[in-house]
Image (cartoon, rainbow, N blue to C red; front, side):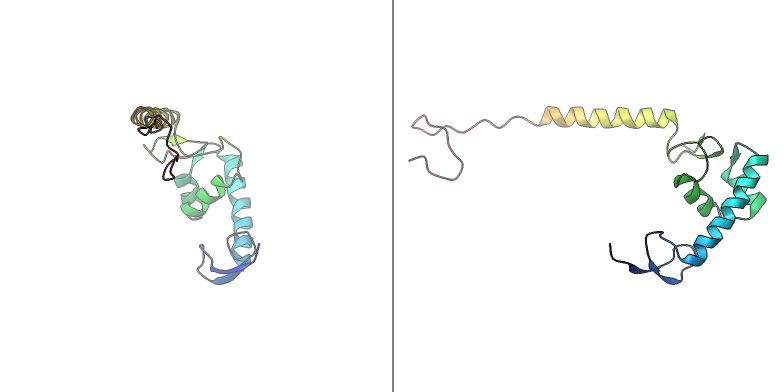
Amino acid sequence: MANKMRNCPECGKVFVDSGAGICNQCIRKDEENEIIIDSYLRDNPGSTIKQIHEATGIKEKTIMRMIRSGRFGSGEVSYPCERCGAPISDGRYCDECTAALHNEIKKVSDSMSKKIQPVKPKVDNTGKKSRGMYSNK
């Protein structure tokens, strides 16, 4: 994998991306922020992203990125479901939205399978099956 020049999504500086996705300076800052958040969560388990942000000053976007990358144990931080906003501590959707999305996908899948009919081979006037655009002769 070749290293690419990118802009750091955190600070905007140009850097050579070696796979971390952010520049070395922001990686160090992330490590410091992780220690701060870990300390806060030890004293305040089950806190929301908003509460962590207000107490530490760390950007909500940064906290969410850290949660999604699995830096904190499941259940330690609650954040809003991406569909309805209910507080969750794991994944992207709450259980109700997950079930609703599965039902919607099943409905679409069922309706598509009903619309798709198997293709029957064409029979020419000699009684032989056609092989597409090629002649059977």
